[in-house]
Image: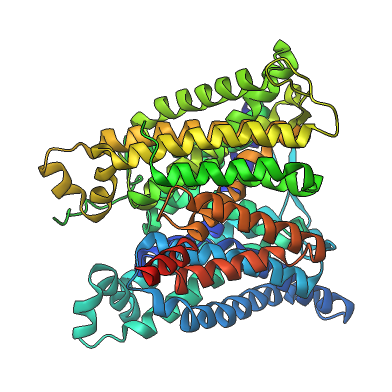
Length: 299
Length: 313
């Protein structure tokens, strides 16, 4: 009984960490730029493919295996901070005056384009890079064995979450971000370079998606269509938490992760169903998500 | 329901199409039928877009309609196409009526994402239901039309004919709705909801109404698609299906009740050509044309028609 509960808890926490990593970039970009970025899923896939190439290269050249985790991180940051800012600078920047829904449609179009670009660059055959996953071995709780890679994912989620909280609350750049979140125009009038804040935020948000993809890549087979599933799950997490809220994403990821692990162990038919049910349930009672600010209605 | 000029002209075009159908190749008849089915779903999305709403979950009603048709034909042995169409639309409308109580309160991004959640719930259920074929879906038996079982050479044309009748009926209904005070409120809601309510119109009720209408339209569309393809599977409820509908909505524009069908036809042609020549880049083509339409043709393909009319006048 207790060991059953442990299994649910450990699986749940691991899945929560994955959900958090996948979704946190989406909420960052929405919070600052008010863009619902459908192309987020493509950056996740891009991160995974970059990781596949870099790690493949790493192990065929027999570089020190334990440094391959830094290679994963580097691959993700490279993907996010090169492609993200390019898209922001040459396409999205000209659309900011438009309706949120129109910008959502543009990022949807970008998603479609990027999906096929990935196929053109990396082909349609699957990639397997399980070396970083197998390298770490296993640990045991209550007689059950789990891969140590779980711990790495949870640790990564904690590091990402805490450093984002630190940057937002304690640094000069974070304060600039918060001020842009509250009022773009006044911030610009106060001398904040809003354009620079936007390009950095978009790059950071895309990199976070790529990091999630890169660190998931060793546990799966990297195939086309990877981003399609991730984007709707990330939407569910972010909207449930309250669009733009960092603690909201964390809480929603934990609730959904545990709920899914519970379902997989006891009622496996409801696996996919449960996440969107949590979302629908939360939104029925709190229309703007768990952590949401009241918004003044403009007449 | 008044028969105005738009409906009459569109009806004439459909009648000409049916007269020409013996000379149209089978694959093109199939493409036209699917375009018609998509157009019906998009007709509902056009109503939403008039009120400034975008639904990322209209595939829910499309899929519900298709599964109603498939299950009734398979389990209850109902093979009459007209009965299947009406039952599918009625069930989709019923689901929309129930969910509408919740969704009609939401606007902007939240409307889109909550409807997405509902369609993904249906997808998740269907994928895990072994009895309904899980991810493979199942085949839909052949149908009769008013008791007549069309031969294999006639079936595509016959289904298209019935689809045309349904489309004409729906188009004239929506046209009547848009001309009614209730329909005119939609644009007012998009422009300024609070002021609209001060004038005494209920935004929530209006949106609930169009939500049910759009659900029924998507139910018709799903039923026609299920009969035309002869096979249904859970991807009909997946969010990418909703995404395709949104693409067609933007492509056609909201200028007229005929625009969704123009959009659906163009989408069908792009899909057929691009998919057969280059299956790995057709999404890119769709994405690029979506960006092109949003940036350069904000009113969709229908704005060409407007321009031609403007030149005449």
